[in-house]
Length: 213
Image (tube, rainbow, N blue to C red; front, side):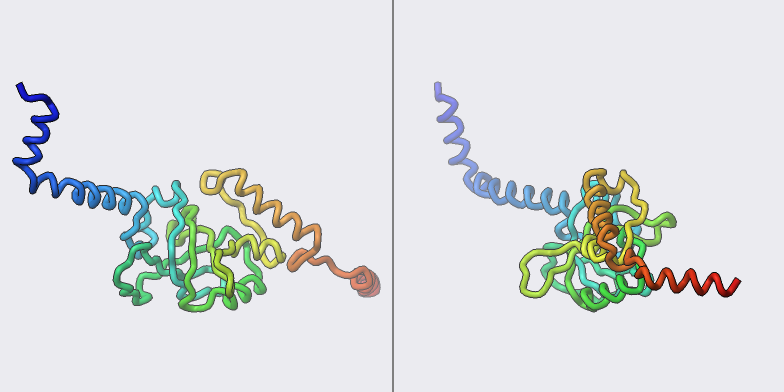
């Protein structure tokens, strides 16, 4: 009676073409599952097209900046990680807000450092209350540096913007605490919008107020 090994060998010999197809088939199946899990080929064109899983898993996406609006809104076009043909036209831009309250200086900084057509990375935290805009973190690469820097942290560090109320569901508490620490340091150092008036200016203002009564 032939052993199990002999039976298997006979099966392989009789179905050699099928056996040869199995490894590539498994490889393509694995690649398909991985690409679907990480949305490697998917292009998000609108706010409504972004699935909830992208927010909860906090996937880092690639994009191209199309404009920075006066209120600090970044018009970004999503580019899949594995885009074989870059058929970008700029028509599928999505509005993205940082979890910050902006000042004129923060918007000017963003326009200077996030020029049109610059490539960025972004992590989506959620949507605005009316679900018309995305809320997320944007990362840009400085000149000659290989890594990406967090735009929100840089603005908070220099006191150019302040942290908005962010839901703990959209940003984990430990990470939210890091942003608050950065802002607290800027406040203590009186940077940017936290810069206090000079003492002589305060005295002059009080004197002016006294004589105008």
